[in-house]
Image 1 (cartoon, rainbow, N blue to C red):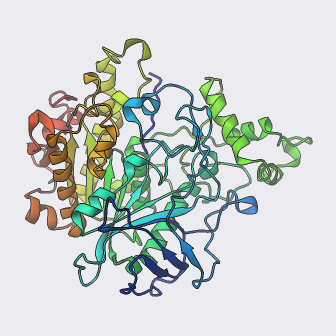
Image 2: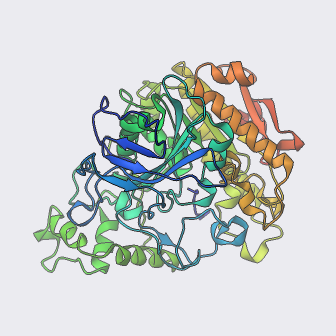
Image 3: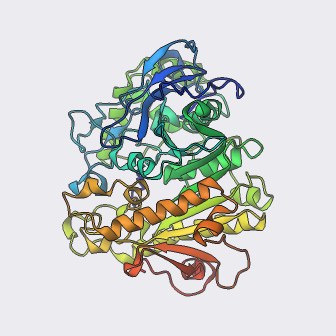
Length: 540
């Protein structure tokens, strides 16, 4: 069945690890880093949270730097910047095709789009190639600081590797940091679609997955500079959802000897969730090049290395490229063209089963979480049948193949290497998130719960106290892990890691089901279908 996977869902090597600035006690809103001094802001609605909304972590990937790996910033540390406005998102197309994500039921889950609407059928108005920025949310100056600094959640946005960014209302952690006053959150932009994953002939091997390299660069910047914001560089937990979750699993396998992170939170996606069609002939990039005026008059024989094609494409406005790809896709034309992660056996590998069995990944504690009915929001939006929704047996089968069993496989492989794996399932349904009952706990419905941004949907229905309780419980479970990923969940929340070979499938937390905020269930209830035991229930 044809279906669209859109999850709602930066970073450069900027300075030496030991060269971090002191926390400025006199002015907590002005922070000196290795790449400049930044002044943030305090939103009066959240008076105990400092926000630094736009900090560059790499040179703008424009002109001759388009389709190159992220470059270290050259701006001197003495430069002063105001980080009070969110940066533009990386180039991305705003589809005109009706989906779950551009109807009013999910308002606020897409990037800020200027004066355009969320189904414009054009490149995003507030997008730019100068987009390699990150944002930092940190507790206010009166919050008690651990001696080594606050633990850090480093968030990678989702979006199917074609959309996403910092400036998404659903993904603002302000209320969570305001409530906890005990952790920092960093969110990032990274290059997407053809700009992040070009698979062009003229690009060197190992440099095609630019979006992943952007993420790594941002993580390195945070490692080198987060102490200046009151953070602990030795307690960074990478967190991603959907494509962002797949991304951080890619990091775990690509950088096993130097992960930087202390732990991971994979929210709705592992490396076993993705099966991207590969394009060994680089035909997708060349197809786009031909349609925007970059076909070589002499033919491919005169441009065997693809450098002439690449040079021409560097002179085409990004909006023209994005609009061609997006509008071509909106029309449903064939052949289909896609730009996503590329298996190069350097950053993204061909055989993750073999690498897993050999233990070739960062053996760090991990949370892996899913929603109960992931795919109900990923199949084509049933415009003609919104009351009944899509055919649930098909949705359930995709739940199992796309999320349930990939999560189970990731759990097993990590357990075999004695890696602590903490699991939870979001099964809550709420009036403002579930206008249609058939949606269940759909893919991305846990975003507003984990970030605490559920009130953005009060125009659909009022937030309930139960919804707030579920959100705060989920946040508290995660924070116990972030503060101490080896012992925190057990000692603080009574939440145990999965144990390989446990006949009951291990300890799994379920949030929001049956009117219960959180409950412990046997993992076999969810994972059993992957080993032929029982049936999967997407509406527990």
